[in-house]
Image 1 (cartoon, rainbow, N blue to C red):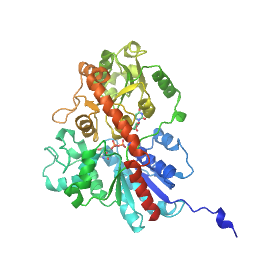
Image 2 (cartoon, rainbow, N blue to C red):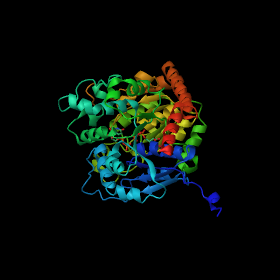
Image 3 (cartoon, helix red, strand yellow):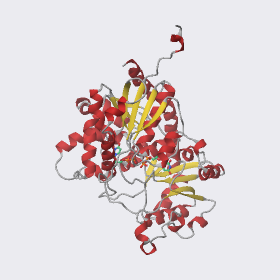
Image 4 (cartoon, rainbow, N blue to C red):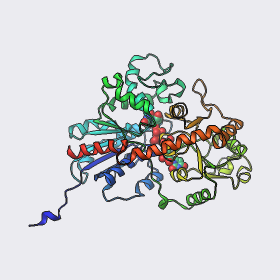
Length: 481
Ligand code: UDP
Ligand code: UDP
């Protein structure tokens, strides 16, 4: 008797399933954290352990919360199923397909009350049937830009209507700005590729979602968001309810920084405000040896302060053919001779990985030379940092074009030719663009636009702001449901 007072009603329970890769895990996990800390949910965050990298587990384990449970799916043996020469989207799709074979029993074994919803990313659309049978509503979290989102909703129709092996004409997504053919990512461009087929498969299945979250907000992408809401094409297909809840980006975690990362921040502490260019190409981008040499010279000639994250060039092994066995991760072996010495005090070169959000948040950071991955883009804008767009793969070209032509927070390096081919940017051009952004009038304008978006991102994510309230409404509906 009386025990009822001691019993607390269990918090409503939601599960997440993300495909491997920081690009997807990060926004899904940040959403999970918000549900737990701001909306009083408990979350089971299902993690596909195959192809798991240290950066991922470090990130997932950094902030333990009693209501956020990380659940590792049973590892699957992918040998014979995926190979290194497979495109990324294909590889991800196959890994997820194998990992979710026992999904019904995985869900039934989750601790906690019955699930109110499951949140997935674009590569996990294989769970719809099982979840339908179990009456669990599935929400898709589209973790890329609104530009790619509208294209992805349009893709099944475009695929039906257009003939040929490749798309060759400017893409006109209803209600959106035209997309130049050379800005289409490789998998969309080449219709015979496995990546294209997989991506189309997932896009068709987006329509099975009860709702779609998207990591953007009105002030950043008004055109795409207006199109999905009001354009007859999107109303007729019909598009599931779309919930813009961005920008959800990684939090700054000084507590988990390792020594060299702390040293980088200490170095930034000593530099003048807005004086440092941060150079990084995402979690996996690499340059050719020739391009890296030009970039290093361009930075040196610009006489600006910089932090550059470098990786072994993509053609490094070939270049050191006669040196087999001496491959090294020491940047000195692939940067121009004497570069590190000559730029000492002005520049900082780090191998492979930087605490990016802490760097972007630092007052000394004045601009970001970036591959324009969507997470990097959001992190830059959330911290008011203008960009130099240097797109590489996936939808980064569209992002770079949108950021420079529509948003006015970036200039693009000329690294894409008229036919979509990769073009080598030369040192003089790099020097010119870097100086323009760091010191010129153009740079000032872009910086003030980036500061506006920083303020607007803060507003939209705060109580009463659009992204906050959009998520709150969905969370409320889950509680009632
Ligand atoms: N991709 C896509 N839309 C998305 C996310 C990914 O078309 O919303 C495609 C992208 O074109 C690429 C592949 O999926 O071929 C891998 O995407 P990404 O580089 O984002 O992978 P990550 O590094 O985040 O795992
Ligand atoms: N990142 C980082 N340090 C690095 C490079 C990348 O912390 O040196 C993080 C970055 O903050 C972002 C993610 O890795 O959250 C990269 O995601 P994005 O979508 O920009 O590009 P992708 O890696 O998927 O191409």
